[in-house]
Every structure is written in C-alpha cells, then in structure tokens.
Length: 286
Image 1: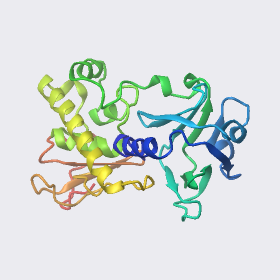
Image 2: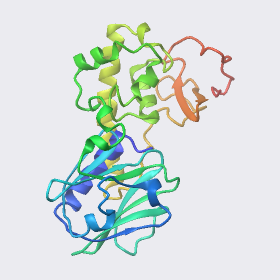
Image 3: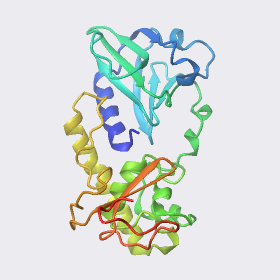
Image 4: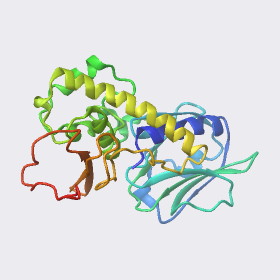
C-alpha cells in the first residue's frame, strides 16, 4: 500500500509535470468499471474530464486530490492496497492492469492508474464530503504537533500499532511505516496505549516525524520521476523478519495477523508476550 512518504513524492512530481496541462482524452478500461471509477457527479467520467486542466494536486493522508481548472470539480485517487500511478510516454510499458488513462499533449504523455487487485478508487466529485472516510481523517502525520498528538492519543486504549494506522487518529500511516516508526521509537507494537509513559509518547511522536521526513528524502532520491515505483530498500525492520536488527543484531520477529505482517525487534522494543502466542523460535520468526 502506498503510504505518506511515497504519495508525498508522487504529489511533488505531479505538481511539476501535470499542472495546467489540458486533458486531451480520457480512456477507461471496461475491466475497471464501477469497482474503480466512482463518478459521484453522475455527469460522465470521461466527458467531465476531457478538455479540463489540472489546477492543483495535494496529498491528504493516503489520498491524492486533483482540483480541476474551474475549481468546482475534484478527481480524488485512493490507491489503497495495490493501486499506483504511472506518468509516461504513451507507448511506455504498462506497470500493471491499467484502468484509467489521462492523455496529455505537447509533449504527448499519459497519466495512468494501474491496480492489479482493483481495490483502489478514483472519485469524480464536486463535494469532497461525499467520498467515504475522507472527512473522518485526523490531522496529517506531517502536520500534527506534539501536544495535539498526545491529546488525540489519550482516548485510545488498544495496541499502539493499530492506533497509529487508524486514519481517524492521524492520517497517512499504514502497516509498513508503523513498523518503522515503532522500531525507531523502541516501542513494542503490541503495547497498550495506557502503558505508555508521557516520555514514551513524546519519543513516539519524534520518531514518527523523523522517520516520515527521512523516508520522504530517501523515496525522492530513489523514485525520481518514476512515480509507479515504491522504494523501500531502506526499511530497518518491515519485511525483514529473521534478519539481524540493524541496531542491536537480534533477530527481527515477524507476526502475521489479519493478513498483515508486523515486524519488530524484541530486544530493542521490549514488551510482554503477545496473548495467545508462544515464544519466538530461534530464527526470530513467528
């Protein structure tokens, strides 16, 4: 799933490369259909976009919001698990099943939306409030201050990783970056929020800011203008189960629950055994 750092860089590239360019043609794949395309205007997705110019693009949490030239129409991309954008020459190789193409001219270029599992959506709307969950998002993870972060965290009682990935708490963090943030903060992902001290909460906030901002720089360097890429070679723990922790050398643990993988270091991120699970094997995997 693209998360805040990837989408922040995608947004930067699109701001440089697509703004104020007229959309000459819109192509929609029949396979995408209503699973991917959500025309909330009911005026026609292709016809409403053709001839319009992209006036701005901003990231809000894990959404990208394009404002069209007259500022009365929005194209909103929610890539979810498997969606990604590709900005390329018209004859460039596809990066996956492509459901929507916006064709630009002078020079000829396509902005493609590809999604192998058709889990993401593209919304066309005049009212952002009509998009499911959009207005339920909390403050952006990059913009929230330490005091607000601590205040918003206080009502939650559950496991800290699950709270970090709730868009209603703070927007932009998913499964992968939650692992990285918690490793940087040296906090066990299954610690319950009430067990965290004020010092640990501040440590978590500082780790969130540092991890996300450093990751944006690393993604920017690795991605360039190939916005379909998802560089994560710099991760410390996520998807590194069984490998040595880069901080202490202990094996990185891996726990799979609800089709999501959580990776952490039991030495650097101390905490009790997870209820209902046995102690880790020697390899560090579960």
